[in-house]
Image 1 (cartoon, rainbow, N blue to C red):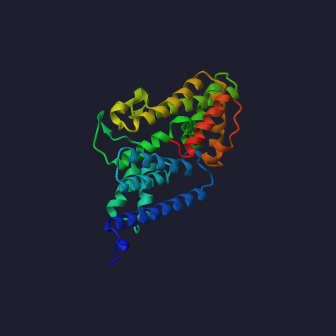
Image 2: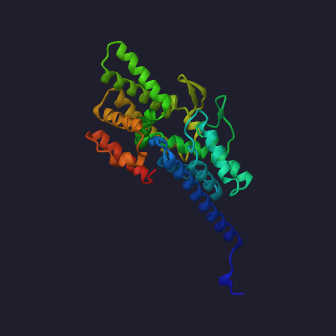
Image 3: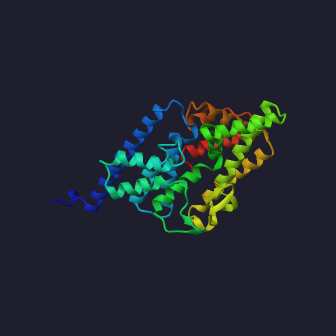
Length: 307
């Protein structure tokens, strides 16, 4: 037998696994796009661009910590569908259930469980009682990917839109504005202050109070651990860089700086309109202030794959 025609069995296995991954990825992306097309109201901050970003971030995270090819593939799939269902408090569980049903005839039970398990509690860090607990790195990767996409310049645009695209946030916004108007504040000023308050609260939560990746209720930590102890050293500097950009925006919005107000006003309005996905909105944004221009450029670099 000609040695040049011999095929390494392990190489065949890797090739087959990669082909299977490409098929599964294409299937999930197709389902995601169909679900998005059926929605009368788009969800800019939780649309396809968000899920693709989280998938890229999850894969980057796993590569950084030296995970296997299989783990990277599983993390990518777990991130793609993590917000397939966005309404409701348990949207992660609902997304996992929907994805699991779709993959039933395509993926083995164990592999399917790891994919959907990463979706189910993607907003929950793997800590308990203030101490990190052992977790599947695939789950950690989806959690990290989601956190990263909620910080930095891109995350700032998402936060502003997210606070107007979700029904409960819109109700809160209107209630706050109505109370302010009853106190004699003009409608325009009341609505402006209400949206700023909501955006600031959400942005502060996303950078994690006290540098913690914990879960908060009424700004009080339930499960916390210092970020420097929670995240692997290989990825912590990147997360800190993105959180720093969020902090700059928070400080500017607190001071009512024109560039921060411009972003907040424009993308909160986009959230209310729910007409397009975030990537389109950011690309079409025509900022008037230098600060907003700088954040748009940072967001576009991130969207293009620069982490």
